[in-house]
Amino acid sequence: MDRLLFGPAGVLPSAKAKSTTAAIERVAELGLGCMELEFVKGVKMGRETALTVAEVANRSKIALTAHGPYYINLNAREPDKLNASRERVLQTARIASLCGATSIVFHAAFYMGDPSARVYDQVKKQLQHLTTQLRAENNRVWIRPEVTGKATQFGTLEEVAQLSAEVQGIAPCIDFAHWHARTGKFNSYGEFMFILKQVEEKLGKQALNNMHIHISGIDYGKHGEIKHLNLAESDFNYVDFVKALRHYKVKGLVICESPEEYREEDSLLLQKTYKAASSH
Image 1 (cartoon, helix red, strand yellow):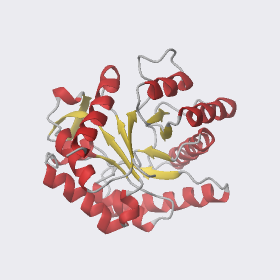
Image 2 (image 1 turned 180 degrees about the horizontal axis):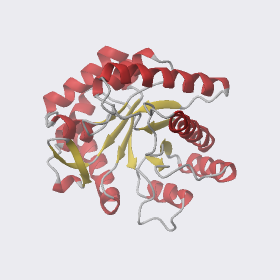
Image 3 (image 1 turned 45 degrees about the vertical axis):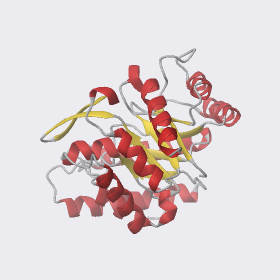
């Protein structure tokens, strides 16, 4: 990707209809550059709709990604739950590919009381199966495990970066708000710079040219994320965040996951703040 694009997750309330195509058109009208399709409650889009979505996104020049279902746990103990989780990742990747999306994002697993190293090995093994299957189908969508917001969830910054280094076809989705909530830190210019430096050192400059970032305001406690907030009500330091992106010349997508009623306003705020930072 040749620049950094900003946009919302899901259908904005101001779209003319509650459809994906109307949502894409609204994102383009607002002057934003990307949108994440929300399959969080299951992949309920068919082939024909997906092809229409691809056409509208292409015409509107909106880059697409997709968020997989919440019911994915690649560390599930029961074989049927594990198989269902794998199937949900595959379904998301297949429909996302038909839509012309570049990446899919999902929360990969829960620790379930297991040692983190064992969970890492299990998730890695499952992702290797999934990427092999998708490559056999000639599906080139990036599979992106997300940095998660709670201590019970697999997905530290280190885990996600390491998987991306070790498994072909895997790249990180860095949710800066989640990482701030999970650590209680990582909310200053220097700390944002540190995260980007880690990505570059682990995955090379090309990773910074193909970033997938989630951002929102966030409420958190000692166990991490409680809920998403709009930026204005949160302590998330989005001004320094965009300055760090600017400094590293990050390219790719920044998806805003603020609560639905604030998503439009916050997507535009992030884009505007980034443009202002870039003119100095």
